[in-house]
Image (cartoon, rainbow, N blue to C red; front, side, top):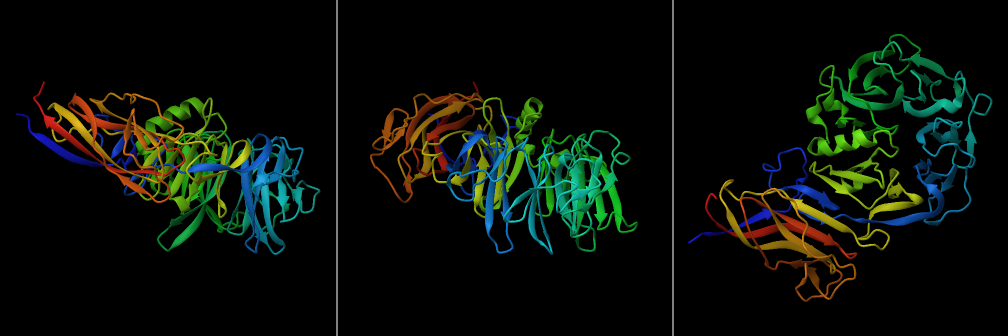
Amino acid sequence: MPHTSATTIPAPIGGLNDRDAIADMPPTDAVIMKNWWPEPSRVSVRKGSITHASGLSGGVESVFEYCSPLGTIELFAAAAGEIFDVTTSGEVGLPVVTGQTSDRYQTMAATTAGGSFLYAFNGADEPLLYDGTDWKPINDTSTPSITGITDTKTIIDGLVFKGRAYLIQKNSMNFWYLPPAQIGGEAVAIDMGQIFQRGGHIVTAKTWTIDSGNGSDDHMVVISSNGEVAVFSGYDPSTPGAWSLIGVFYLGRPIGQRCAIKFGGDLLIICEDGVFPLGRGLLSASVDRRVAVTDKIQNRIRQAANTYKSTFGWELCLASDHSAVILNVPGQMSNKQYAQNTLTGAWAEFEGWDANCWLYSELGLFYGGDGAVYRAWDFDSDDGEAIEADCLQAFNHFGTKVQTKYFTMIRPYIATGGIPSILYSLNGDYSATDPEGALITRPPQGMLWGSMVWGSMVWGGSLQQVQDWLTVGGIYKSAGLRMKVLNNQSPVQWAATDFIYSRGGLL
């Protein structure tokens, strides 16, 4: 008589995996993980979003913030050639800036003796300077002014490094620096044409904090469109001995203008081969590709990069309150995100947030969509719409790879504060198949598993544990649980699954 066994498998807290062979994944990984968020001890249906500011024309392509010396935060959004104050939720008022050519801004915050300022650059219009009250276009005759650059409209990005503002010129091998502690003045060019050997143009520049052996020090990193990275140290490019080139490395072609963000003292950079932390990637004259933070989902990122690398929307956002790094990926019909839990390194795929751009602020996590700015990672619905999640846990051999097993029962450990609709099936022998049935949008009287009523409680408020046995039936050498959930505006958490099966022969 076959021997009956029971095994408990933790929920797929290891997250999405498309790097390893489907027949040899860790049991806590997932082949499919859409709208599930992997946490250290469980996985949960991702949080939702809500409209924060509406009434904007067209797609919002930039959301940015101004922080005053008093700690007041103002939010702004750019759409259809205009900039709106979106600090307060609700319908937007009149625009604060009109007549712009592009809505794709990069910003630079600077504080001088004259106050705290925000620069907004788009490479098509004159830079905009905000002083906390007024927006002012900056050219060679304005007050303040920027001279030395033939046309200030070509400035597309900027940063403050060791008390000095640096400006990136669009489609050029020049970047420029201003006098120290000033937001205007005569700009002086630094020619990267003799430093970058692969051609192209400068995309962006960022600060990078590294330990040189005598304590941490800030360096400037300049990134070219053909994948070269130049690292500078010092504080005054005009003075020999106070400015030096540390080295030039090849990283891989960056994707998008917003290709890099600070991550602690390090930099994360999106390029064609994934997202790399600069500090661990540049171990020699070329990048060590094994340290990509996207290593576990590298195939998906590479495919998206090959198809949509020229499409606007690539961006990284660090949401530290949620222990998440969000990689926005544009698509043909809508945009999606890959989100990594920074505590565990686990990845998940998010759908339903059709975001063009992102901002993480003290006021929350925001993204710009079609005609609106949304607040994300809040509530348990997307503007009142239930969230659908799908997961196929890694195929498990349950101790023996070649021996057939007859699976009879499973028991997922679910906690919920509502009445979600759930479909399940046992996928076998590396074949991903959808569960039968339909998810029910209107909450039923009790939780639904497929076409059967599972339990008879109507819940609300605090999370309730559900641990009933469910019949499956299937003869496989390996198996993985497929679970689809329509959360019906309630939290859903999955901790583990029990399996009951009998071992058979080798055939």
